[in-house]
Image (tube, rainbow, N blue to C red; front, side, top):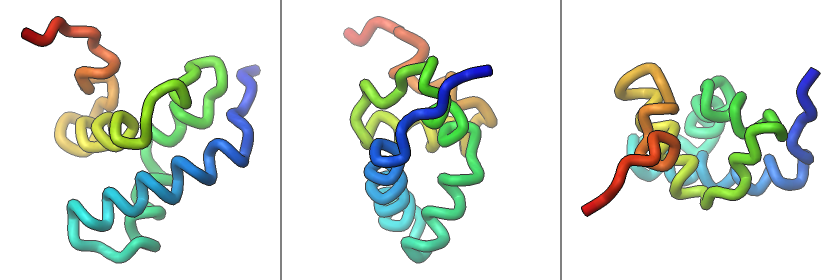
Length: 85
């Protein structure tokens, strides 16, 4: 059984990523939060074993955008580890 990321950490990410979703997609902050909470990206963030809280909220938002576009948050540059340049 995996450990769950502390609620205080999740609350910060939930608020910041939901605001980014709302701004980017034109939905309300509450709808942005609903979308984020029901995503694979949030599930991964909540899994403390993955330590995604090392990433910034913008990186987590990028993972969420990749999940929406491709169905897989792992397609994010932050998780793929591709070289930039």
